[in-house]
Image (cartoon, rainbow, N blue to C red; front, side, top):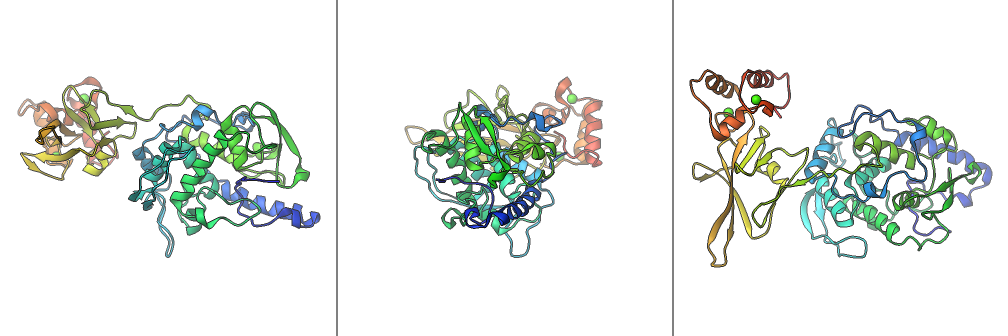
Length: 452
Ligand SMILES: [Ca+2]
Ligand SMILES: [Ca+2]
């Protein structure tokens, strides 16, 4: 008897109603199909992880991923997730009549009440997929990397160049058991992500509610395949994350599946948990950690202003100098605000020469204001902006900035403050010299894509 076991296969076939002689053939067909569906090659896409040659012997059936890693909600910011999505499918194109690519997808978040599993979410409109994933990871305490891997494992929607409506409807495979139709009430991308992540919390916090199913700290006899003739493996499940993965996909990869990690195995191979493990390794490194927090909160900020910097941040914050430095060329305020949050009683504006502006340029100020108890508007912070390479402060990086760097080096017109910071392209030596000029020339010639 199955309870709320959600597995990855989208078949609507009840194996028990099919004559045994046909079950094996069906199973072969289904799993060959799902094997190809899941076998997205991600080699060469490593952005966050050290290159590791994975072998099947590295798969630990009883400890697919550590609890620390699985439930770490702080590994990526929303901006990190957006850049990850941008990088995974740069050639993705919306098809006629189809949905947008996941990197471009936007939708509304309905309010979600707090419950025993997630902390609740306020309604929000026009949210990106990255923001949805991030907010769900925060609300339900699930690693956003786990959600990204699940999205790939279920529907291949992270790397697809041709997204389909079905991918969004069943993004996390939630409420799609292998013997019943998908539940429409859970359709739609946000609800898929939310309910899928929440389900892992349900599994974790209700570890006794599915009696007779997988138990942590015990031997479990786990099927290789829906075809029970394929047999079982005795697996000592070491942690709750691994238990949850088996609840979601109740099969352990057999030797053939592990012998051919990037492809399919044999007629008794199931690939869901293998692919989860493989995608995680390829994209984010060792699923057993250590966990690295994406965000370095900047301390000592005024009340109501928070900054969390990550490897993907488009700027650095030099608090002693009150300078937002090394801002990526072409950044706009929206991009900068991905890493800055302000409370409701704080307002923020970009100012240059006393005027509110929208162009992010060297020499502009990012001003934060609030109302004090007397109802007066007071400034609580003002940070000077230094856009990397925008040495003359017009907001673009071009040949005139290179000229300004040359004049500085020749001693004709010496740069100071944020303009000097903008010219220090390679900051290690903390001065502007010929190596910075060479770097700038390379950028203007198009031989490097970014100054940062
Ligand atoms: Ca400039
Ligand atoms: Ca330098």
